[in-house]
Length: 387
Image (tube, rainbow, N blue to C red):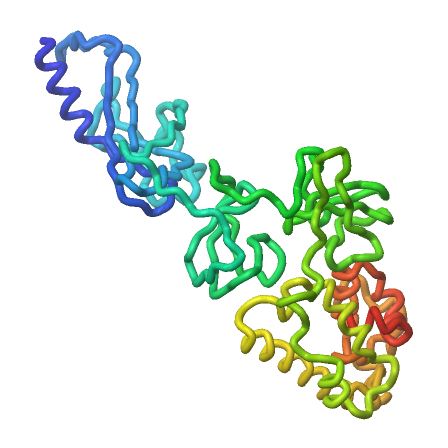
């Protein structure tokens, strides 16, 4: 009888299927099955086989990362009989999309899994540390600040982060070979900045560029690089070195348009729009005209200044000329409405910021309540040039 029971087990294993929620990857999946009691009965006198244990194993191809399976569902053949009854069937597509829609009784058990990263007997290739002088093109990878990163397009000199130009995709934590944060020391051990988190005045956070920042004023998670009224760079003392503020446009990463060229481009500009004010505003956007070749940087600056020239009449106008249009820029369908008034959201500044929803978004980015006080854009050149 035991021989028959073992044959049944072999047939049983062949009737299993596995559905795994995982990323596409090459490799093998195997299934093993054991019974607590292998003494099978007869058709006339069936016997319980006791506890049924199914073990699945995944082994990736050498050189590939471990499997990313988060859930495995084992399917029994619908013709298998247990206790003289067949299972109610549930299709694989339903199991994967919404298992709660499977008929009652189709789920016959559950189990636990133990994750043991496997490399198929090979050491996975080590991702090289980020190098600021290396040119990275799309899909090239680098490790930085204990994370692995993948470049989305061409870049050089922009350290991996979730901010900046957005060229880098964060692939998660890595096991080594990383580059320490700029100037970071062991005395600095502050939490990572999280957008949307409330920070009381005095809070210290670690930004995505590896630098540390302290909240000068309480804020609901404004970006430390953009919201300079709310944040200031923080230096770590006590033998741990200092943090390095984000790039400010100096050295080889300087703004590619000189003051003389700027004045030549805008011969009629009003004092409200100064070259020094422009450079100060650019510091809030460290990736602007600081990445790529000289040609790319100049093209980026030229595109921006051409748009500014068009919108402001050569940096001559601060407010939209046609006042008849001023009442048109209030979108009452927005939940926050137009608290400053129907005609308060007309074009202002070098890019002629318009509409209540754009003032709302710009204010959130800068850490200013431009929705309630859009007049700041016409009154404060630093605000206008930062948009």
